[in-house]
Image (cartoon, rainbow, N blue to C red; front, side, top):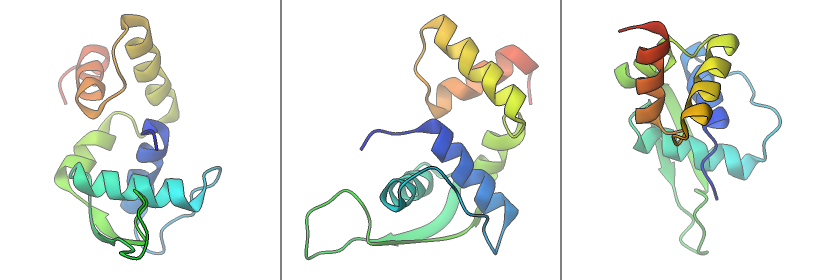
Length: 115
């Protein structure tokens, strides 16, 4: 499955809102579980995931999210607002850069100054 930074952002926003976590629409359950796992691995949110050992898949069987990490709050600081998120994506696309967490941080600093 390919990484979707829009979905990753939505997952961190949902975790920041806290329980009960707001639903994330427009994505399959598998995509959401996979991206929650990625957000945990990237250190953006706290949580755990379990794999189903009876089948081979990259999708975890279940994912539990508890809250946002310090890094996750930093990630959201400038891109929480939909307009700013659009500016960051446009900036990176125009510069030919990949939409990754590190490049998002660079774009945020370039567009909005040091956090």
